[in-house]
Length: 406
Figure 1 (tube, helix red, strand yellow):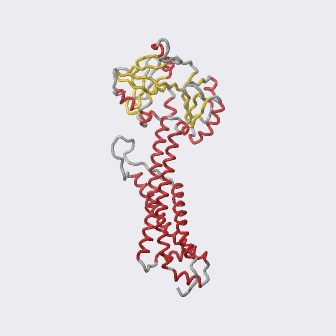
Figure 2 (spheres, helix red, strand yellow; figure 1 turned 45 degrees about the vertical axis):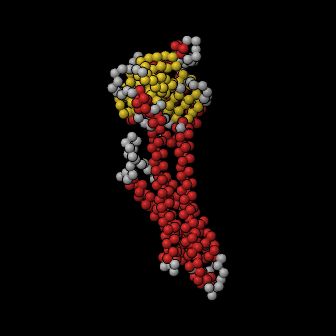
Figure 3 (tube, helix red, strand yellow; figure 1 turned 60 degrees about the vertical axis):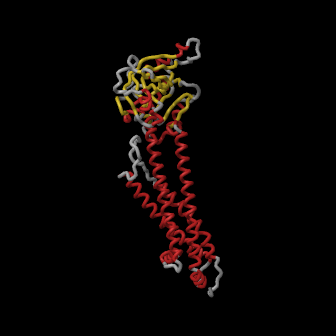
């Protein structure tokens, strides 16, 4: 019954045209803000998914590293135990050092990650090769795969370079401050094999090579590693896998992919919550138009209120009628705005309505990902704020003194 009255009031012609105009403005404001709310957050979701997919191409589901110090000592029995775990798809031990690469007179400092032949099984770097191949050579003839940023800084093309690079690596336990600084570093020539391009932070920082070559250069023991990187058969069960692996490596740190990039993921969450706050504030501002619309409607329907009270309507009944009017205005705007946003996001996904300027980005148009749970939250926020805005004029209508001579 409340909504029947509200619908009749919504459709009825008002004596003052300004009431209609304000009502439509308030509904249009809610429609636009709901549309913007969903589209902006869908774009955030799209970029978040893109960034996570790029980082997951390089960072594995689980990483085991030393709790203190640089190197993790791993026994043969622990490696055998890893191989026996049913939830592990593949693992690879790594040695990582900050090294100096030289191409004639050009010098570049890079993080050189040394891996074995199982490396391609734990991540998707091979799918992001833009030149050459994912090949690391052997101890006798080592090869290096460069990040695209490192390659550009060196001024080479990895798959076409005839001349090898020179790599300088600090030996274990040695520094440039030792009695003989020359003994602090190992130097060797290394041939470029290929180039990967994943994400700027990764491409500008990392290069890959053979673990046996790295061990020889750094003089580390056979059971010493920087980390063990693991891919899981079911990545969504990383937390459970972490607990199991922590028991196998009690003195090490076991990190999920989220924990390996915690600051990045926290920053993305903060940006999303800031967007929620900003758009909610815009919705609160738009709600003032609804307060004005309903307040004027209360004045317009003053005689109707008196008639309803004469027929026995309680204050609660009168209040609920005008609350229903506010709910009707907001829900129409919110539903239409949501439908338009979903249609827009679908077209953006399939057609690419809005393109990203320039040609250097990984995708040519803005990525979007629709989260229907998020849409439900947005609709709830819209309804709650507009109902709160409707409370004052609805209460004012309910408290109208009963006087049929009005």
